Image (cartoon, rainbow, N blue to C red; front, top):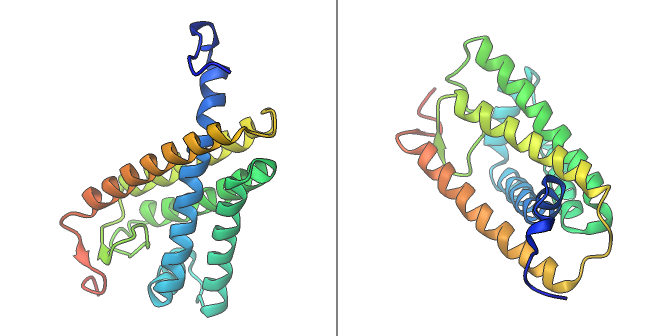
Length: 190
């Protein structure tokens, strides 16, 4: 197999097909990191869920949410379960987008949405809405396109996808850090 990609394969379907692995790896890392964050800071997660959903979140709900995120992330890493993981991730981020949108439109912009990995509390704004909507759409695109891909994937391509996914995750973390600059420490908004 040649390492050179022939220009005739640069169709929209070809480009999207080659992007599925790296994007799936990125989304998987993000979901697993979010699950770990929820396990690490259960109180903040419970407060964010309560503020956004309007229900009192307890330890079991936080644990269940973290486990579903981790399951979606792990499913995205494996080619045979990638589509299911993508649809689950799209549902998670889609629901989160709806909750964020409801709070934003109601003018509740000073709540801690739990949107970042840091200890800072950023005001709820269009950045969080755009980011969450984009993640839901990316997950749905991965799920939709994964159904059409040939399985299995050769190890070299899987490794390249994983490395590209790591690069995307590092860029995401940089964006998250930049978006959080000037944010107040969690708890300062009360």
